[in-house]
Length: 67
Image 1: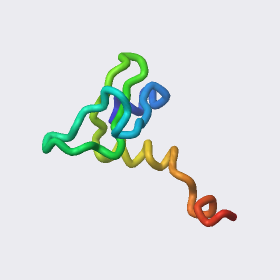
Image 2: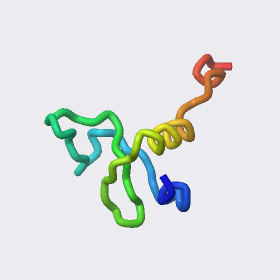
Image 3: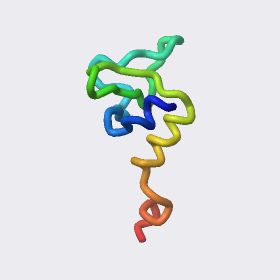
Image 4: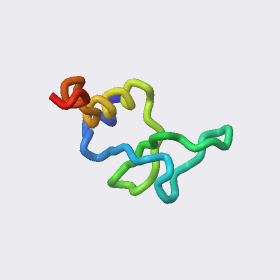
């Protein structure tokens, strides 16, 4: 988590069907995958980092209701 907190702008979430995105170990497709913009490679987020990233890009409850 410390690496992410030092430079959160360096990382992003991409759809699991993005070109070059890895499959999960069971051969399925991830819905979202982490991406390191500096190294230009896919990365695996811990659950706590994934939650932070999702919270920063997900609409708030009022936005989802159209308010």
